Image (spheres, rainbow, N blue to C red):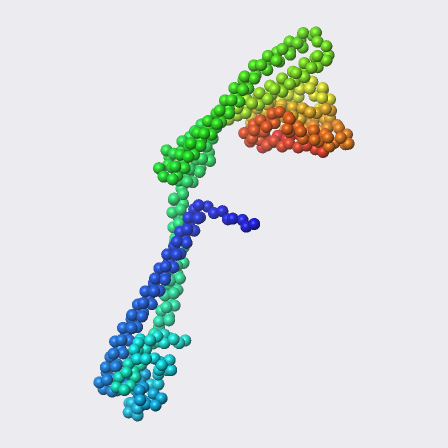
Length: 435
C-alpha cells in the first residue's frame, strides 16, 4: 500500500504557484516562438520579393546574368530551351553565372518564396521566368539556426526562472495568506474551556473564512464547556447526596459494634458492612476528585512523603488484609514528594489497594514506593493446577472492580500513567508512574 505524502498548506500553495508560473511561462515561450517565426517569414518574404524583382528587372533590361554582391543572396540562371538546362555561350563567356541550380530547385515552378529542406543552413528561393530564361534568386539564412538556438536557450531560461519565481512568490504569499490560520491554530491549541471557561476567538480575526472558522470554534467551546460543567455538577451533587446516607450507615454500624451485645458472627458481618461503606466512601472521594480535578483549588497542594501516606492507608486496611489472609511485604523510600494534594493520592492509591485485594484470598501483597512510581501487586497462593481458574478470576477483576475507570480518568488528568497486569497464576498488579 502506497503512503500518501502529506504536505503543508503553505507547500501546496507554493506548488500551485509554481505550476501556474510554469504554465504561463511555457505559454509565453510558445507565443514568442510563434511571433518569431512569423516575423522571420515576413522578413524573408519581403527581402526575396525586393531583391528578386530588382534582379529580374535588371536582367530583363541588359540581358546580363545577375550577380548580387551580398553574403546571403546568390542566383542560378538557366535557359528554358537549352538541352539539360545549359546556358548559352554568350552567357558563359560573361563568367557571372555559377552552376546549374540544384535538383530540388529545378522541379519548382516559378513563384515563391519556397523553403528548401536540407541539412545545411536554411534557404529560401524565388523563381522568375524572364527573357527565355529561368532565374533562381536564393536567400541563405546562415545565421538563422544560431539565432533560433539562442532564442530556445533564452526561452528555456525564461520558463525555469518564471517557475522558480512563482514558487518563491507562492511560498512567500502563502505564508502571509495562512498566517491567520496559523494564529488561530495556536490559539485553539492552548484553549482549556473546562478549566478557564470560554475564550472567544472571533473578535481577534477578520470577518472572512478564518473568522467564520473562529466563530465555529467559539460555538464548539461553548458546547464543550456546558457539557463539562453539567458533568462536574452532576458528579459533585451525586457524591454529596450519597455521602449523607453513607454517614448514617456508618454511624449505625459503629453504634451496633460499640454496644457489645452482638456475637462473633454478627460482628464479622458488621465489619464487612463497614468495609463496604469505606469502599463506597473511597468511590465518592474519587467522584469528588474527578469532578474538581479541573478546578484551581484541586490542583494546589503537595504531598511531602508518599511512603508515609501509603503506610497510613495500609494501617487503615490492616483488619481487611488479615481477614483475606494476605501477607504484606512493603518496600518504600522515605521523603518522596509528589506535586499533588494528599487527598488525590489517597483516593487513587486507596482504590488501587481495594481493586487488588477485592477478590484476593490468601497470598502475598507487595507494596513498593519508588521515587517516580507506586506499585501494588497480589501474588496468588493458588496451586498451579488451578492457575487457569485463578487467571480468569483475576481478569474478571477488571470488569467487576469498582472505581478503576474513574481512577484512570483522574490519572490521565494529572498526567500520570497507570499500568495493569495479570500473571499466569492469577496475580493482579498495578503500577502508577508519576513522571
